[in-house]
Image 1 (cartoon, rainbow, N blue to C red):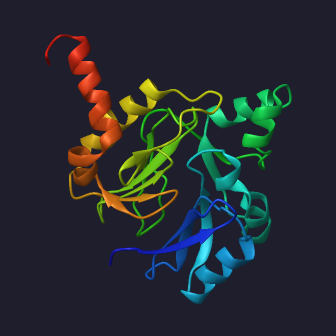
Image 2 (image 1 turned 135 degrees about the vertical axis):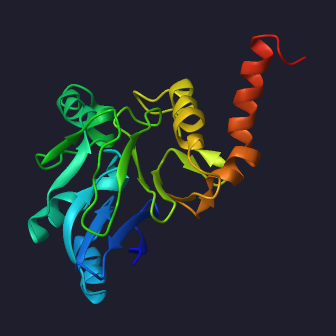
Length: 224
């Protein structure tokens, strides 16, 4: 039986939090505890699940405001990319980073750049390091259901912002074109904001990606 996915749009930035549960095991994973830990816990409980893992796509404040409370309420292990602790140290010296990257509980597992298994029994998930919007950005791919939890990397007709400290457009485009676009076209993208899309739709129609690729073609002389 495929896992079930609940979407809760929470917080001042209308960020999507995802609860992925297995009715077979009764366990659930939360991706990006945006805000209101009690509501996330209640949604899982209403579905008959216990939250036993917390995953973060990146450490921007609008994706992690409920992390500390949810860890306290559930004692679930916290997974983040290994770049995040470095940013936590830098925030002390940089007031902008201090606002963007609030302090988090000590993570139980630091994800590496290579894909890692992050799932539970009945819930297959693997990490895909997708920097650009933030250096610690990770997307999570569920091959059994062809679903990508994309965070703030790729949106319907748009891409993640790159005007933040430590963000970079070229890096983001590499993450999208070389990593996310390697997934099947039918892969459903559940983003950190706004509505779902698919890899195939964005490969064919995303204006930001197409403009970027056209610029690269022009620069090497292969497109007039």
